[in-house]
Image (cartoon, rainbow, N blue to C red; front, side, top):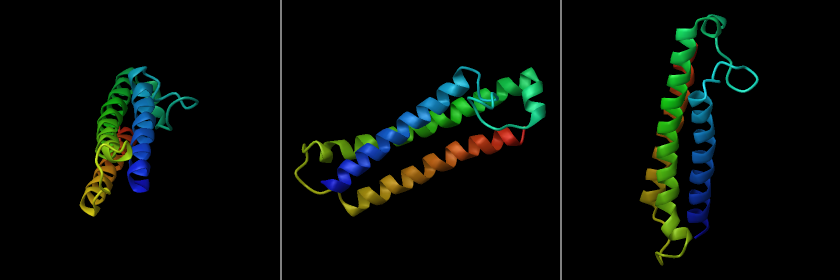
Length: 116
């Protein structure tokens, strides 16, 4: 039960953090160093590159947020006691793989912005 609670809470927290990062891109503030992220100077100057940077951040972080939300959904029935069994090792491995994919997608977005 403890691993299910940790899985659910970890997935939910990661989902919220990634949604906030996606919202930064949606609001057009990805290139604002005080709110957003460190980006090359030429991206800050060019309006078209700023727009692309915001779109990239939004898409990648929103996708990663969905994946981490699915991790929280995977553990929720166990954490709430709806399933009277411990979460299996296979499900934990799947969740870890999903977390790795989500992290890769989010970081890929930040790297793509740096390469604009």
